[in-house]
Length: 277
Image (cartoon, rainbow, N blue to C red; front, side, top):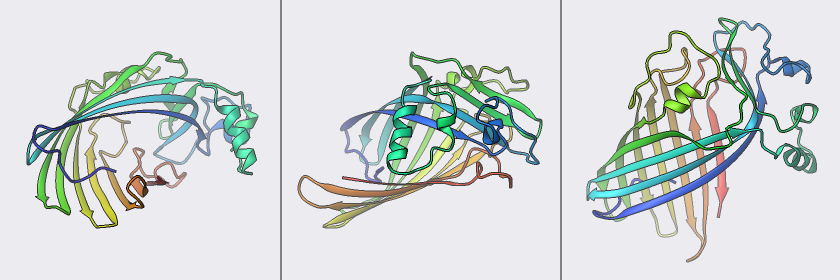
C-alpha cells in the first residue's frame, strides 16, 4: 500500500505493473437485460438524470512509476500509463471458472463471446454519449501524472504526509477514444484536474498500518453531469509473519464518477477488499 514515509534525499525507486481486465456488465435498462439478443447500443427509457452502461470487452493497462527523494521533506513522483482495448479471449475461461464455483455468469454465456462493445447512455437526453467498438491492439498513452509529496511528520515509527498531483498527456483517453462526436465539449488542456492526498502510516513490531484519503477535482475530464469531485479512501494492515513473508489485507473505497440517481447502483460508492501474501 501507499506509505506516508518519503524516499530519502537522493534515493529513487522505479515500479512497473501490468494489468489485464475482462469485463461484462450492463445497467438494468440495457436492451441486453431482458433479451440477450438485444442490441448492445440500445437502452430503454429511464426516469433518471444519470447514465447507463453496457461494457463487454477486455483491456490491458501498463504503469511505470518513478519516485525520487528531492530532500528530506519533498518527494517527486512521475507516473506513466498506457492502455489498449480489445475483444480478448477470456470469456470462455471465466464462464468455466464461474461454473466450477457455482457462481452465476450474469447472462454472459448467452451472448456472443470475445467482443468489444462499450456504450454509455445519457438517460436524461436519451442518447448514447460514448461508444467503443474498434479494437486497439497497440497500446496508446493513457495519461501521465506529476506529483509532489510533502512530509508533515516523520519519526522512526510514524509518518504523515500530503501529496498534490495532476494529470497531463491524457488527450487520447479524454477525447480520441470515444467513437461518437460530442457537441459542446470544452477544449482539452493538460493539468486540467488535481488530486489532494493525505497519508498516515504507523509501524509496530509485528504489524503496520497504512491509510490515506484523497479528493480529486476532475473538472471537465469526465461526463457532463459527472461529479466534479471524486473521493478515495484506503486502509491497509500488514502483518510480518517471518523474515520472508508478510500478510496484507486492504480495503479501498471511492466515489462513483457517475451522478447520483435512484434507478441503479451505478452511482454508488465502490468498495474493494483484497488480501495476499
